[in-house]
Length: 130
Image (tube, rainbow, N blue to C red; front, side, top):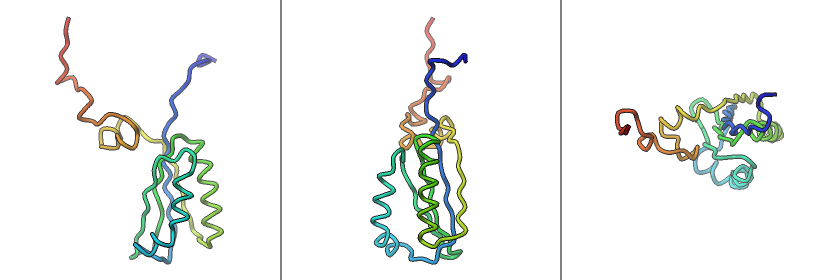
């Protein structure tokens, strides 16, 4: 009721997918996944994806950053269906809200469209004029 007419900024949302994966790995995976990567890159609301692989434990996955929780939720449902259709089982997905303020301080500014930590004035460097 009190928030009527107030627009809240979208909260970036991260997804972490992990699952058992028999390969291929590295360059072979990159070549085999070009169409998949293109589809992911065109996902509405996606900011970026980092591809993860661990040959030793035969695990793969990805870390995704979305503009907001709604975009992350839509993608999660789509990708869970896609992975199941690929015959991949044991998929674990976690969703996280992003603490933008702390993330900017730890160099995530480019991904979040925020100023670098060194560009944010601290109280020690600010000149306060009467």
